[in-house]
Image 1 (cartoon, rainbow, N blue to C red):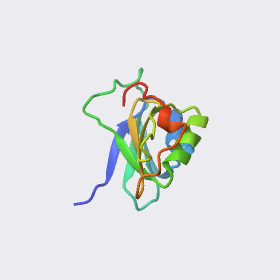
Image 2: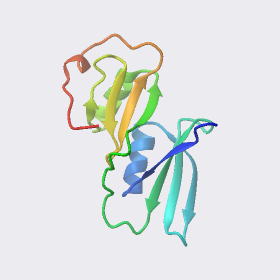
Image 3: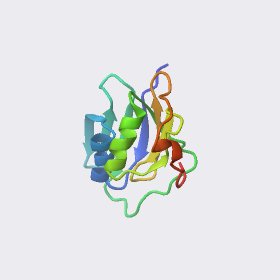
Image 4: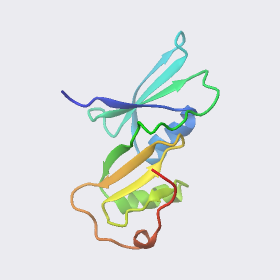
Length: 139
């Protein structure tokens, strides 16, 4: 058995793609549109051979989806958690759980999905401004 993908329903496809592609750095692997089903599926990943994220955009959805507690979070291993958090913060993404330990942080997608960022390999030495930054919101 191998892990294939995680599916998230998104209310605003362009806003979601901006977050996952422009801000997090994923790439679009493939896309499927169904006129009869009135939906678009966009598959994203760090590389085409890695596990992927499926964004499902239902064309006729009138309001944002509620955040269900059955969904925990997406998790991505990153080469430099401090650099990524700094870049995300500069792009207006709130760092809900700062990487105070040099190992883990949480941010949130425009649709409210929690995204965990984990430092690859050993944690980086703790440093400011992350060390003193408080948590905000929930993830």
